[in-house]
Amino acid sequence: MRFFRTDQSRPDLIHKIRSRPEFLLLLMAGAVPLSFATWQALLNNFAIERAAFSGAEIGILQSLREVPGFLAFTVVFLLFLLREQRIALVSLILLGVGTALTGFFPSVIGLYLTTVLMSIGFHYFETIQTSLSLQWVEPERTAEVLGRIIAVGAFTSIVAFAAIWLAFDVMSLDFVTVYILGGGITVAIAVAAWLCFPQFPIRVRQRRQLILRKRYWLYYALTFLSGARRQIFIVFAGFLMVEKFGYSVAAISVLFLVNAALNMLFAARIGRVIGQVGERTALIFEYIGLVGVFVAYAFVNNAHLAAGLYIVDHFFFALAIAIKTYFQKIADPADIASSAGVSFTINHIAAVVLPAALGVLWLSSPAAVFLVGAGLAGLSLLLSLNIPTHPAQGNEVMLGRWGVGFRNAVRAGK
Image (tube, rainbow, N blue to C red; front, side):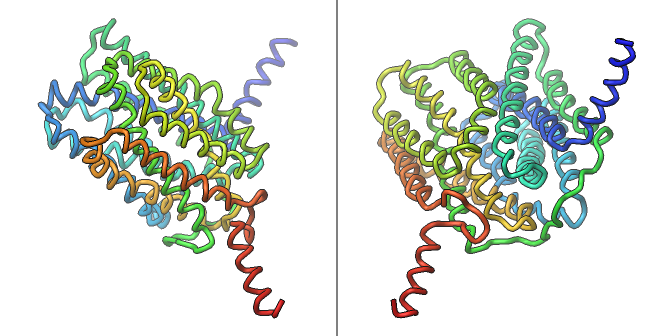
């Protein structure tokens, strides 16, 4: 009888997994780093050793990589052809194929083209993943589920980095083989998800046109500033570690692993905390912390303290989940897919402008670059004070509500 119950429980467990869209979100989230972490970890060595890149070519490549993110709003037009779940899986396949092909094209043009293909898959998937998460998951659980998605991605990032180390240092594999493995596993997971999971229903039919609504202005502003701050962290925080403190590739890799481990351990808990304290409190805490971190970056002179700031900085960004759950609560459910693409584009505006502009500023004053980051965090803090304690449709901002009330009072002669 014991064995019989075990056999019966397996179909039940499989049915439970296949019937819950949350499991599909987690599976897809785990597939992304297997390709992207492989591409990211090998890029500089492959570009220099096999494609003879200089600083000019690598700069152009990074700009090209960000273009699909800037154009993420175009995902709304794909809704005329495919449902969002299918778009997410096709995007995963493009990400994996772009990564797998990279090793076969060790040239400037070849690397540009495979990077754009990989980036289209990555950015479109990230856009659709946000949209599906906000549509499939109940608002009271969204922050926790988004935290779990971050945690799963962090875990597979650790697996990918460890596998890359084994592949090169222990098994002596070449670039082509590792790229194929990283990209191929992502493709295999996407195909398996396509075949094994049903087409989950969408609660509300999504609008298939670009949408910009005045009442979402605070969400747009917070999204833009979040993207700007993240660019400063991604581009210049690591650069500071190498240029000022002489961190080696191994040391920087350790920092990546520590950040991934912390995300794996705490991201879901951070999501639960956001669900308990609310978006306003979570974002105020995040931005106060980021102001302090960026100011400290500007004046830090100790290598160990700089590493600590790097870890804390990365940790704070997990609280940005609150921006997405804030939007889920204030948005018309039919706007979510279109708004996810628009917000991803808004988030990437800074990626096109800031690195070059602040790179020039860096030449004269690295500290000033981080003070700019502190200023952006401070502006985010001021805006976060305008988030209502209980955001909802019709209660998107505090200042807006007060303004309407004030004007109505004036018109009534009170």
